[in-house]
Length: 222
Image 1 (spheres, rainbow, N blue to C red):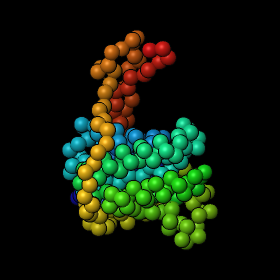
Image 2 (cartoon, rainbow, N blue to C red):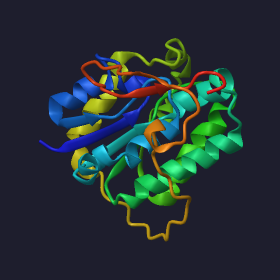
Image 3 (cartoon, rainbow, N blue to C red):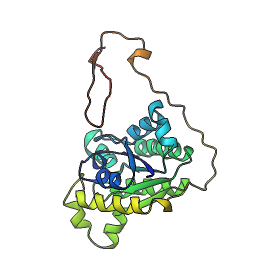
Image 4 (cartoon, rainbow, N blue to C red):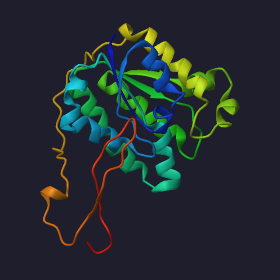
């Protein structure tokens, strides 16, 4: 079996969706987290505990179009300039790992959706990464209205079929042939243990079958 690293939001966390079918074909390390932007993807790419899995990945799959649109329109009102800057950091980092990468673009029509999707397309092409463009497929086959019925969480059977085709054709995905000198900020991951603290943090340990994390809750005025 080959190794797939999955970076995404809730569409990659759904039990009966994308991750389910990928696990039927390959070994999957799922680093997705619902309700988060591409900065979460970048965070997982930088975490020390994930480096071995990433370096051994036969394919890295990432999907963040839908949650980007939610954070642009609903959750955080992120500007298009911030979205593009954060995406540049993500795509540049993906490129530096020198592993095959698949950008999955799921269909989702919301304010400025075409601009955000084109950001992903532009950066994927710039860095020589592969795209599985479900939005374009829906548009070309005039089934956009069908896709719109399911909102941010796409129909699980559609995600499973997309994942099945990716897994069956994993050998098609190759390492980028582009050659760049990457120059971007140095990112470091720190916790409250590394900081000068004023007050006591609430510390708790959420965990389930996928996650086991130490969380430091920053309260007001701390």
